Length: 119
Image (cartoon, rainbow, N blue to C red; front, side, top):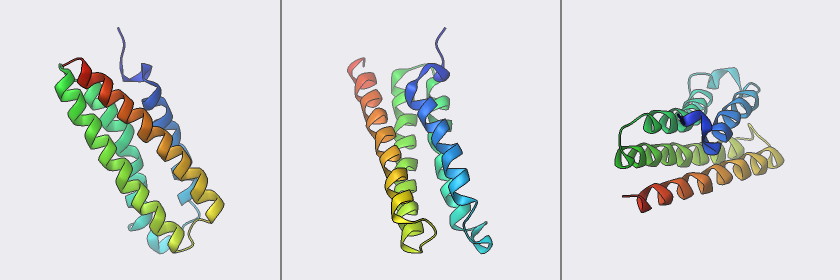
């Protein structure tokens, strides 16, 4: 029986969380309950919502959670722009993170469209 763990987008989003945690370790300590926390929560939310949606009984419910994951992805995009603007991450790091984020976004959109076609 297949689960969320079989989905490439879930695997990539879990790997991305690890990268995000490592990147945010160098953020200023006063941000631990601010931007650092928000970035980490958004990143965790992506894979968590994919997993929760995959456990649901219908494609319609799964799609709903995939859209929530996509929303978290866009939150993270905004938060990374803010981190770059505050010079918590440099331009090279920002470009690498955004590239991974965009890849996950394309995969999420593809999965949403595939599941919609099954309705």
